[in-house]
Length: 98
Image (cartoon, rainbow, N blue to C red):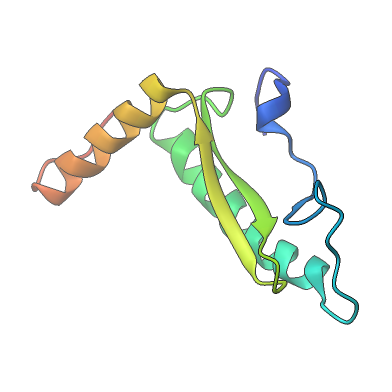
């Protein structure tokens, strides 16, 4: 993946509760994160294919408190607005080109 290395675009494991210290014994957070990582990687490839730089907008894998995978979209407001425009154009029947 490309990127400028900014902290908010970290590729690392972002498990809910890490900051608060909440870990529940018996919950497989890693399996949920792996599932989310697979989905996030797929979305990131699509973003790259649409001409976005992953240093400006990207999908990030995480987990919820119950261990389920979660994919979060992180990005600079301008890039997220541009993504919304691409999606709106696609919904409206446009070609969705960035």
